[in-house]
Length: 273
Image (tube, rainbow, N blue to C red; front, side, top):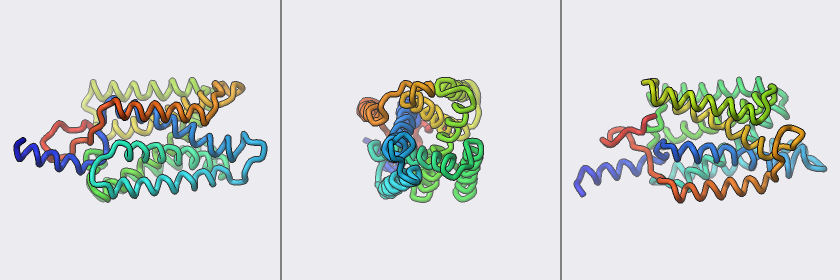
């Protein structure tokens, strides 16, 4: 092994987010679906509206539970010395689950509704990206190799996960239903994929657009799986479908190649985002 290869490996280890591949997007969509069913299992099936005796402020309690887990995992992720796929995806699941309960709290218990919640959270995502860019000069995931970059990365991700839940519920309740909503967001992702392969559009912009859209796709698919038949769902047990999704994600992490994205300056193939 040459000295340049050794240096490449050392730098690569500093990048603690995965390479953006097809496998990344498959696991991401499954993780967002798990976040929807898992969040609903706690705030709806155990604490909230579908129980015989709903707990007051169930969405807020669920948000606090998942928020503590998320903060703990983000701290561990930032302090880690190298990319760890298990830690990374656990943090993603925590962010999408916390996003589910936080969005439901904002739209249902605060009472700002799906349009208000979606617009507010979109503003939070855009503000996070703006501050990140103003502070560090880029919002590319290729640059996520230090504590400051990782902090902005996880703040933006959590806002985007929360936005996706509100947006998915808004579209589904607008008359399209959960299956129709899933088709809409799936078509949106297909358009982004076409732009990626057929145009020279900004890879950074396409990445964040796709990252945000995978969340409402997962939200509508999750609701389609666990909501009652009277609402157009398949009425599968939320804890059961959550366990199945978690098992599939664990299997895919084992089977699919998991490697860190290439950090700028390593001389390797750029992680086209």
